[in-house]
Length: 129
Image (cartoon, rainbow, N blue to C red; front, top):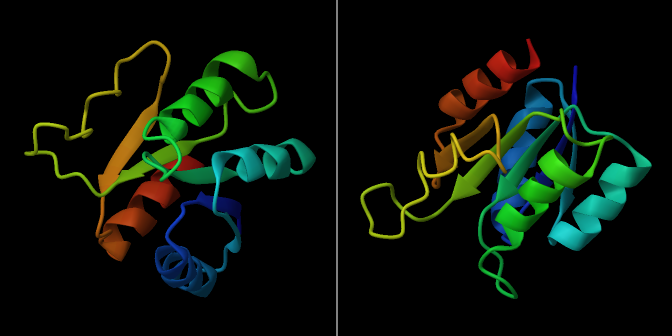
């Protein structure tokens, strides 16, 4: 199937999500930081990236990597990207829909954690189709 990269600092989330995606036939790699993920993507282009919004060292690290992918990297600009957030859409800081039409983050999709795996698989399938 596809080569997917999960970028998230939550090891348990990465392990569980990777296990589910592998059961659907995908090759999955995980990285715990945007910097490591960028290095991995430069070496091998993923078919799709699942990217956490917030990281302990920088609350905007996920958005910064997404902007880099879309605006600064010819190689990465068209890689399908799903951003993940633990902040609920009804919270004052919720990210759902906040970047969907941002010119710096075109075609980014947001999903809330905890992830409903059927929704995730459906979203991945539609983006890879």
